[in-house]
Length: 478
Ligand SMILES: Nc1ncnc2c1ncn2[C@@H]1O[C@H](COP(=O)(O)OP(=O)(O)O)[C@@H](O)[C@H]1O
Ligand SMILES: [Mg+2]
Image (cartoon, rainbow, N blue to C red):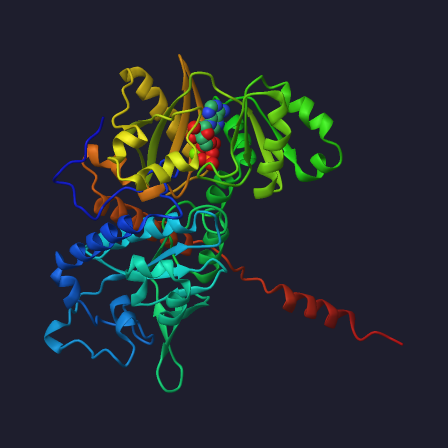
């Protein structure tokens, strides 16, 4: 079993689960206290962070650093002159929470990333929390994990963030004060850390595109493809990637008569997996071992989405994951991990709740890094991971999950916002979490710069040409 390295930074902890990527929604109080202590320790270990304050502001636009945003209530005095740094750092909006079943898991992923970003000299993180009903908030309260247990306190203590489209994009923060003052915070780059629908599915990525804010991770297409298991499977088929036989059941077809759907699904095999097409963390997933369990499993999956995917279950399955990173123009693959499930498959509880019982996570979760595989098999899986990443137009970091049985290898799915951004899979090859975030953010900016050089406007003014043509024809006669 993999043991925790005592030299590993205490704050840079992986979120176990989320198909080993997410922690549980309802975490025990003790776990929260430990996380909070770690966050505090990280800050205390980082005195320069407290000294960072006002930096050069871009001409013509007020640039409010996140540290400044945290302090912009009149209760906080401005930092002393000697504490001001004149080196511009990039403001990174860290977006987390979201309207998703994986809301709490996202909070934990974001706290890990924020604690790492705060000690990086080039970046100034601005936490932006998306509430369960979709409101965007920022403020110092977001640093305190305990606060998230009381949504009303978060709403009270944070300030609303509104969006200001344009290039460069900005977020507008209500900074309080006598006249409801508003500050425009220019965002240099965003780090989307929302798991699941309404965040990992291309919607947030599309919003950031419209805002003109460069962002790390997969773009609109890659995010949307990988959140939709049916579309992802079609992309895998087109790329010739090995996957288990499957079929899709839509709500409309199911409601208009389930017999045909049940017959088609049963033809895939005796034991099946039924999943919502758009989901994660095994929510709504059922391992169907007998025929009479199939219909209830489809009903359950259709509670979470309007489409369900039914797959043949892989017998004696072993699960192996590989992270892939687009670093500039290079695509890298990580060390492989083996994840052992007990009792048929990795359920939500196995991914998260066992962790909160206090047992050493690596043993509870059965993560083995590197995965004990013969080198040729490991190489084959890495090559398939890279091919899957490219087939779905992924970017930044993504984790590709495999199902193995004997000599057979099947690509199961891609997670475009994996828990802890899979940093623990990069560490064995010497890429720290800081390094991983730096590479992702630099690649995001490079992608945006390349796009900004594209032509989005034609010289010909179509409306003028239409007017001219009308004029040449002369006025209409009655
Ligand atoms: N076809 C399959 N055969 C065997 N096990 C499977 C199969 N599909 C899924 N599983 C198990 O179910 C878990 C959740 O399925 P997955 O496709 O990863 O959905 P999610 O997006 O919810 O994580 C997997 O981690 C694995 O343990
Ligand atoms: Mg999964």
